[in-house]
Structure formats: structure tokens, C-alpha cells
Length: 316
Image (cartoon, rainbow, N blue to C red):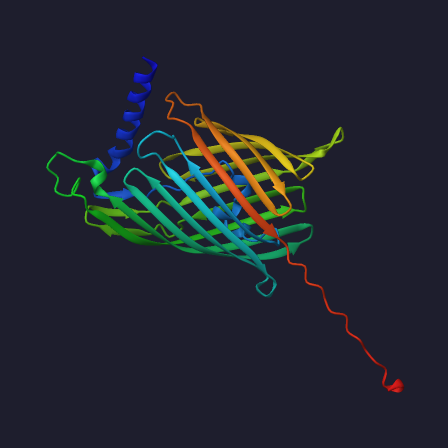
């Protein structure tokens, strides 16, 4: 009986994922950005102002698989690369993102630049991101029998959208950080045979704080909050808490309002970081397990200045 119920729910979710394109409105919103459980480690993915903020060359990859076992469930990946450039008074970064849900497949590439400046005890980053989104719609996914020559035809619609992002990121030493950003500011659009797809402007607010307890001097605690808002979509609210031990291991939890609770853990060996998150759904329907894996590598360039030898001409 339980097995039959699970099959029924899985089939229902697959059907719901396809409803949008079966209806296929003439004007629709583009596929929305996916949020990560590892949001506290991937600031530049949502805020160009945070690019190269740690003054280190870094690269990290994130893979997120939602609702495993459900056909057409979201699969998201990020590849982030950043490096500081002193002559530009900041840093640059590259963000590659792929996102697939049901018939929709999106590939995005953005180049970020952040201007860094010290203001008193604060470090401020102001960033700009320019990117392109390529969105494909596989119409054969729907196997339509309603006579629509477009749906179920096996055709593939695709188009390119130009996007502008902007953000502000502020931090005080190792005490706290805060950021405000917006993606798809220009609300770019593309035309396809079935209608028009427009990206929705999205806003992000993030903040975090670091502290230690005297009784646990090797533990560093980092509570954080991540908010995202898109017009006509409920506010997304995430609260997280991470405890790091001796800069080697960490564990934490993220509460996603009306969505899930993510349990996380990670480890660091020299310049390599690996972590994993498992989302436990808190909604009425159990959509299947959600997994997220992150691998990162970062290092700082140590440039030794050559000592200059000066000779007194009196002794030549």
C-alpha cells in the first residue's frame, strides 16, 4: 500500500512539473534561479559584490539533485571561479550554472567584477555581473495528445537572454558580513515559436555573524540568514547555523521556511574543501530525497619581494 502511494505521488509530481508547458502560455516567466543549501559558501553566485572577497584564487563546484526518483525533478549545478586583481582594485569571477527541470534546460554564464575598498574597519565590495542565459524547451517531453502541433512534436525551442546583475557586500574582519543584490535587473526576454519568455528580477539579502564560546575555544559558530524575493512568488526565508572545529571539520543545519530542513557537514584538508547537504522536506507532500555536494579549492598567492642590493659608489 505504501509503495503504491509513493508511485502515485511520484507520478503526480511529474505531472505537475509539466503543467506549465502543457498550458504553454503565450507569455511566461523564465525558469527561476535555484537556491542552494550551501548559500553561505557561494556568495558570488547571487551577489557579484562578493566576488574574490577573501583575496584568494578559488574554484568550487556544487551539484544539487532535488526529489530523487521523480521524473523531471530539478537538477542544478554551479561552477564558480574567482581571483583578486590588485591593479583593478578588486577581483573578477566566472559563474557557470546549469539548471534542468522537466522540459526546461538552462545554461548560464556570467562574468563578475567587484570593486573592493577599505572604509574604516569595514571592507566593502560593489559588484557588477554581465551574463547570458541559454534556455531550451524540449517539447517532446509532454507527449501531447490534444492535437497541438507544437507540443509533443519532438521539436526543441531555444533562445538567448542577456542578463545584468548588481550587488553590495560588506564585512568587518572575521566578525560579520552582509549583502544586498539583484539578479536579472534588466528583465531580459526571448521570443520562441510558442510565445515569449521573460526573466523575473530577483532580490537577495544575506547576513552572517561569527562568534566563539570560551568553553569551546576551538569551535567557531556562524549563524546566517538568506532571503530571496521575486514578484508574485512567496518570500524565500532560510536560517542557518554552522559550527566549525579547529578549521578542519564543520557541521550545521539550515531551516528553509515552508520547504525543508537541510543537515550539512564538511571537511577541509589544506586548501581542499568538501561538504554535503541533505534536505528533509517539511511540506505535506514527500517529493523524495534532495542531495547537494560541494567541492572547493582555494589558495593565496605569496609573492616575495626581492631584496635590492645597493652599493655605495665610494667603495667601488
